[in-house]
Image 1: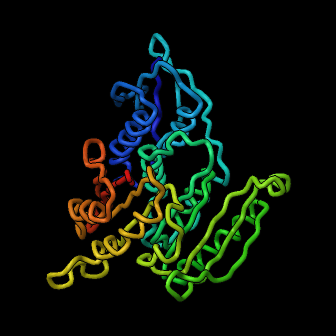
Image 2: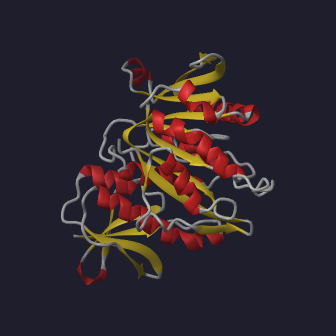
Amino acid sequence: MRYAMLLKSHANARYRQSLSQLAMIELQVILKAWSVEGEPGCEMLGSEPFLVFECDTMPDGLWRALSRHSACCLLCEMLDGGLIRPLAKKTDLFLPEELPQVLKYKGKTNADFTWMLLNCARAVSAFAKSEGPLTVLDPICGKATTLFCAMSHGDHAIGVDRDDKALTEADTYFARSLKFNRLKHKRSTGSQTLTGGGHVRVTDYTVALSSEGQKNGETRNLRLMYGDAGDLCRMMKPASCHLIIGDLPYGVQHAPQEGKGLSSPERLLRRMGEGCMTVLKPGGAAAFSFNAYTLSRQKAAQALADAGLTVLSQPPFDGFAHWVEQAVERDAVIAVKTK
């Protein structure tokens, strides 16, 4: 059977030019996770761009993964005579899909790109076919776009950042959103003792879709940790996260190179490396995006490899680079914990 996926339009014209490239990578990775043979392609149907692929069987899990594709506007079955039949997506959203989109601020990562990274990391992990919620960590979460993407799709989320102002704004926005959507939730604040001494402030949310769900434990958790990403080993238990997603600072406002030393993004990635390796579950995956003008793909990959992760460098994982603005060409690396 042949299927077609209509790609979303995007308000950012330059990102729209990269959409087919990134969407194809995401589709390839998802299909491979479900052992679907054959390469997908791109066709213009009725003057609109569609990704097309063939699949002998379509299990619910694969259909759900395709429905969550970051660039998917419409999924169709291709019929004889050039006809297509729209099919209902199985998104199973836990929180509103617009949750990561509403909060606007300078330097915000494109939420669709974040969803793409999440979906790709999940697909290459040992948990691609898991039906239960995963735990997603963003060690440099800022105002929590990654966390909100994870929560909207029904996963647990943990964010770490030392920018109190950014975390406080994320906290305020999330609380306001939950109240606006009349969702059952509990919020608590406190501190967590670090291994070896010291402590960090934490804010915890437990969210349910209904009172019944709250009573039955059908909840999702969000934790905000006011701390340094270099202290992940001291803040979190070993093997406590399925996925790690992060968007490294682009180094546009400040000089990326300090003398002959490491660039700021590379130094940050190396500081996080050991912690990422420790807190990831075996079979878990990490995905980091960065500005290729301030951190080369080779150095980013080497930093993760030196931490003990296995970097995926073969096609299509070498094709994430795309232009964002004059000073930013965004790229990404994905690595898995194989031991």
